[in-house]
Image 1: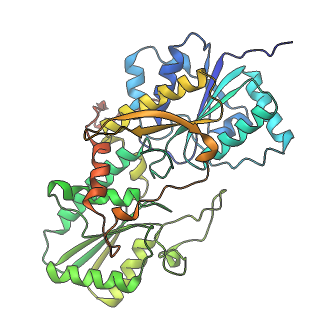
Image 2 (image 1 turned 180 degrees about the vertical axis):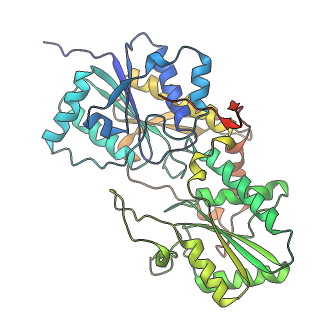
Image 3 (image 1 turned 90 degrees about the vertical axis):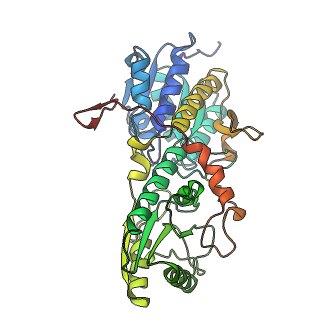
Length: 409
């Protein structure tokens, strides 16, 4: 007896939200809705946990025209909700049979999960189990992370908008600080556990002669408190106000996070420590060693949910990646991962591709050392030129009574 062919699709979002993750979702729905091989499109609420708990909704029919898609594309955060769930080893057949029983119930032939490197662990395991047990469902991963730390991809959906926000806010902070003559140091803490791509973007103002941080520290280089202090002192000799941008994940030579004294020590399901506090730790250090006015600023959640500062390039590429992921699923490319590539040539152009998901899961792409100055206290113009095209263009966002309008499922 031949295996039944399922024609329905399901989409989920996983890991940290971003300002462009819904644009990728829109692209997938666009691609699936336009193909006669798909009958119904479902959404899993809160990622894979929505499948585990059978919290699934029909979403394909929600889109009546272009206005619906465009509203979703400029809506930040995860429209279907998200989760951080680490699946057990594929040897746990009882667990995976329950998941595929739910997928079979909804006759799911195409499973697409938007997420980062931890989320691709889920795609990898589901794909492996489906292949080993001859399941009818094609499993595809779709890249997403503001951290821009997925290997093999030139960059990731969500990074361009986050970089645009960080570059804008840090330039505004530097401009604000520059109006005073009182000696002061402002330390801006930016997300980035293992890779400094977000913090790198704090210097974007430099390319156009706008204010920007004087010192930039990434986790790719060992952080040294003494060297940091000397660099701050040198900058204070040049001008009264110094702005520092620092990744939350910078570590000292002993492997400890520089802000560890100001952190809770709690860890997530993947064993990652909850980071925050390096700006406060450095604030206390500068105050003690120099004695001038010091302020710590933590950019926090707005880095990934600032829908008012979207990059048009980021949103356009995210939609196109979603469409390409839909095509990959429909073509039966099981266990693949959809990524953005940069085409060769002087003019900025991108394409899409798919790679085996196991090559990406649980791996991190670091900022190249040549993108960081020799003394580790700043980034190069070459690094900023890599980021700049990803932030280009603005998105028209509908407002009502001063508040942005958002798509809701």
